[in-house]
Length: 173
Image: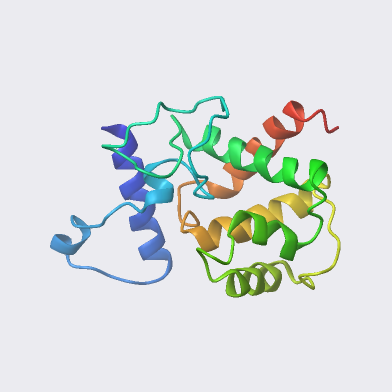
């Protein structure tokens, strides 16, 4: 289907960009990672939240993570989730945000924090304002890169559009 073609083409574009040539037989074997397959760039766990664009749970397809009907709806959900942590729970540093998103019992949280902070050029314990769309887009891009969604077709435009939708949902001007 068209979605699989776009996903495969985006991976091939990433391979070309990084100058990694593969024989045609290998190109046909490229596997789509979970974040891309589920349109869930932060690999959000299944919840009872009624996200717009959320697909019904189907453990035959995915046992653990939310699935969305499009990359935009998945990106929107993860940005709203991040804004909720920032605004309602006071997660105002990279360290606090990543620790909530990727708890140490399941992840190498320290390495994740270090990578996101390095990508953003910030101290991981410095307060950040995710109501600033530039800061939010930097944060999302860094997390998306870590989670394996970085080479998806049009990611920067996708993030910008999803931020606009999330800000509308959260009434952020």
